[in-house]
Length: 304
Image (cartoon, rainbow, N blue to C red):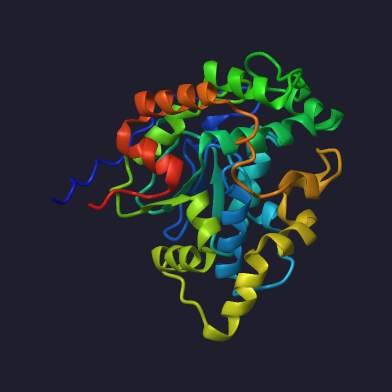
């Protein structure tokens, strides 16, 4: 039985924090071929940005992807500067958001790709992102004008305790996890929405890149295919990290390569006990429902 196509989402709230200013989407002037890459965070965002850049620019070398594909709802730099830069772009735009659907202005003119990852893998990557942030990162996040709410502090706990607090306080100290995943899952039936999963991309990157290309109506020229694959691989991205990650990695100890880190799943297996995993899995089913929780864990969507 075919599922009913959901109605177009409507923005019902604003999100403000040490990171967010969702008002940037209000009045944003969409173009017919815009692409929006959406994730919770540390779910493969940079990887998908790299893939889309490679598809649009046919395997070009050393593209400044972070500059070309800004995180629009990050509150720094000021939205006036960011909007002007995006308006000046003449290539097909591919923008990044970490917002749930109901805090985003959703346009039928754009195509949306949401990439998800098991929350345990997210936290292990998020911890590395947070614990290696340098003083400049904290200055940018906490001291630049316009911050709403408390500042974000340095991690004081080891990674397992960090995970437990993230789980019990729903995304602390960043932003809620479950509502982000659930909001995008709920609109998966829209024709301009595509769901991706980090594990599926990891297991068969060529097939997933072809899926993305079909969804975006981007033809792949056969002679460019090997180069596109090479440039989307972790080794290439790590070697060219300064072009790929925000501000060339200057906000993290160790630079851009620290931001990309390992690109692997399952690092939590030896650190979370059976009770930790039971609590996480029960919460996933409670917050997301059985089908979405299964997809988040495995990347496998139920047949329509």
